[in-house]
Structures are given as structure tokens and as C-alpha cells.
Image 1: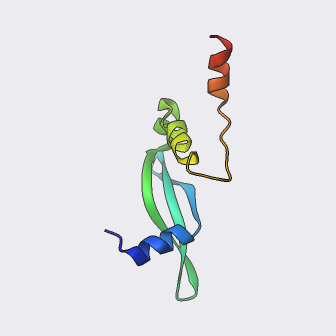
Image 2: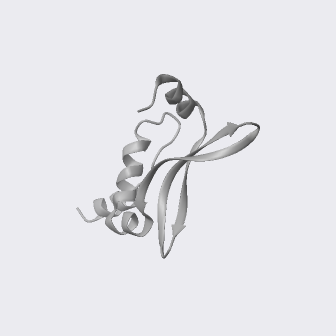
Length: 88
């Protein structure tokens, strides 16, 4: 479990998505950079799942849509929703 100082480091540091290949699969991960004795280390916060499954099931879009609602600077353009409205 994270203590408050660890949590502040996560919040104040740059976090990003990356893919990590293992065998035939690509995993989607949330990673952040941290400094350790003068060098930058990448630390995996979470492994979300297999990238191909996240894409094919729509889980990736759902995950991103749920996160963007907390952003004050980003907006999400959902072309699928626009396409669906055309047929209503």
C-alpha cells in the first residue's frame, strides 16, 4: 500500500502509456519515470492487459473515456458515437 509521500511522487511525476512485448503478446502498461541516484528509472504502475484484446473488446476506449473526464485540459472525440447517432 502506498503511503502519502509515495502517492505525491506518483501524482507529481510524468506518467504515460507504453506497450511491452512478451512472447507473441503486447501488454499495455501505465508507467512513470523517477530519478534514482542521478539516473531515470521507469516504474510500472499497472499492467492494463493484452493490447489486442483491449482493442477488440472496446475496453481500451472505455478505459480512456473514463479517465479523460477527470482532465481539465483534454477532450475526447468519439467518432464511434458520432457514427451511431447518424443512424438514429
